Length: 306
Image 1: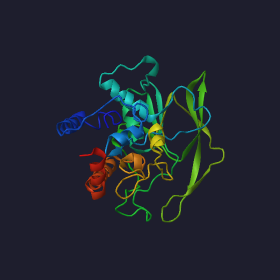
Image 2: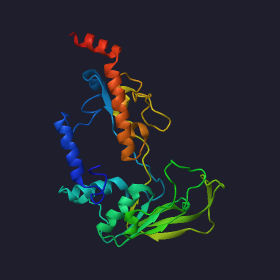
Image 3: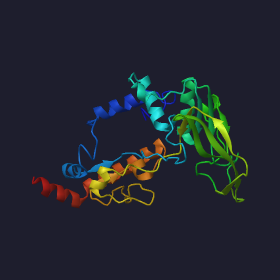
Image 4: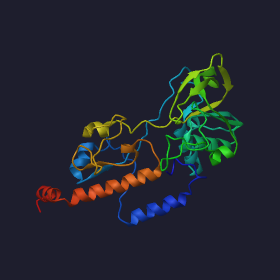
């Protein structure tokens, strides 16, 4: 939240206050630790009665089309985190700097992350900001397939978009265009969407002879995230994954390994902060039940030889 959400949307004093509360409640924070490398999963499971894995969903969706390796094409999050680091006073190495100042910026993909790229680009002094989607324009009112209390899949305009950007719907990006290794534009094609009467997801076809080039100096990919990193930690613990690549858990939020729990985006997939908070509370209840169960108390007594 500190480095992923722009400062104009989240006052850092809110985070500082909550961290201070956690410190005073006795939480010990150990930073600069690469769990799974510096500390193995098996070491953690042997050293602690319970381990809760909350590593998020950090694998972004890519757009694997010609020109993806051109300079000027970036994932959204490195751009956003870099801006927050800059505001916090960190020095950004010159060869790592990503800036929208004076550039024609295109954001591909919707959601909060895409809007954050728009607002940040505007604040950095972008010459222009364009937001493109491959989807059809959402309806003004809820379709039959999207009843309350589901999240309304209707047309919305974020505060960042209100600050000034051009929005294009039904565009499929087919190629990144460049010169001498640098991005100069996008080749896009318009799409025709066909939707069922109930408003559910439809199908699309490419309009004939609709290809065109949109000039661009900088592109941010905001296509969502796939799942948590399937690295050393998960492999060491041999944790089972669901069909979407998230950590599989039971109704108590415990994985297939006794005493190992999962919470937040690691088990949900990329979602909202409020959903992660609720998942964390569910995991805390599951941990409490696990630690206070008769079987666990007996195991703890025998292991520690009290």
